[in-house]
Length: 540
View 1: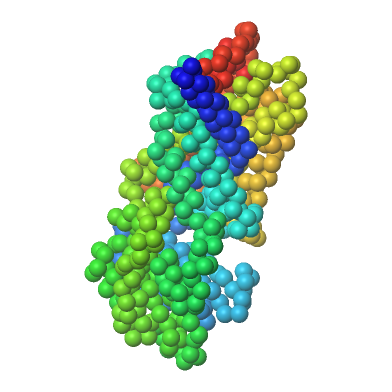
View 2: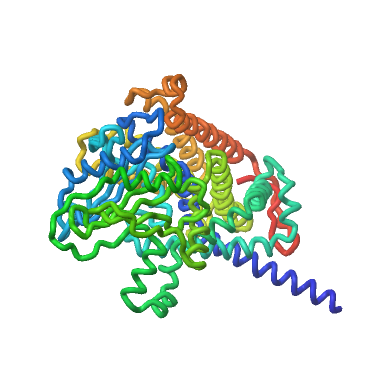
């Protein structure tokens, strides 16, 4: 009797967890899918940015960071005189330009006092290429959805990540044979195949999925839970110390008004090179440049550092004297820095980055198969599967636009990058407009067409657009695929070849979906196993 009660209680817990897993995964599943896919692409955002700026030449050999920093700093003094702050992100093995942003006093300029631009590391001059955010758009969309305000976008991303963490834990409790099911995949079995795929994708990358979800929450923990920080840190000096432990950007103090030129930036960078290595320089930041109170910070690069905690040298901007070496932070800040680095993966070499990309892509597929499985399982229980209720139809259509439609929209942004006239006003913004307009059109298409037809048509559209990206690139630039392969330009060749691989994947999915849609469904039955509903027989 006691054993029977325990088994009943166990089944009850698994059934409760099954409902929690289902609904936490569904309610924010479309947001999670978009976050996973754009986050996956962001592991190669530097390479994608190079592809989206074909005017910038490939750097065949690494340049001396000291000379690059000096040339661009001199150019900034001409481009943005009077700037109260500027920052230079120096080129490395993955980027071929210097990205700079600066702040002008009193909110001057078109963007409220902020300016930005890319600079040629060889000449130091500003690059007047096409306006684009490059791969940074997908990175920013990943955690703040772009059109939303940063606060609300990041809050939504945090809510989605929390629901993902709950869904992972509930899913593990629900499927007591999940590791056994990992080695079981029944191809072509309709709903059973979706469940097998979902289980396999979930278990294979389970440690990564837990890590990436939890560390994503840690990166913005002060936004979600600010009360401890507010209670512990009250004075301006304490806030300044906290900022120094979390960021290498020196806050500009009150300028003296005495105009004094900066000391040699190259000499400061060379001191940093003696500590960290010839090429391991990440940024050069300046506060109050050209003033007697100027300060310069030279930050260490990400190479070989499994931590995002600040590691920088602070110099007097007038004399060039080293004032302090900020290379240690407290235990809490260092823990945050390690978790932040694990999430971003910027420390990784090429092989590790590909591993991040592949497992993250599997996580995207895990979320996608979970969304599809919800409709597949519930269709079997509808009184009339051909005439489902409104809520079911809405979820089904949102699935189509969120999964197949997002692939179309992301590829449309690459097309816009090549086809929009270079002189277009706010060109970078129009690339993003194209992304959202096309994404909206995929939802309209999904609402107007039968579900299976919409799936097939959108998957084929994504396959066609992806397959034609190398053709479009060859027609609009001087760096076609065959040329890139011949000269060893693996950034351009890699993007073109990856588009071809993804096109093949979408084509296979389109063929499989069309084949299932045309198949006559055999009788259906609902089996109860291990406390979880499993649909057998039939196809969607």
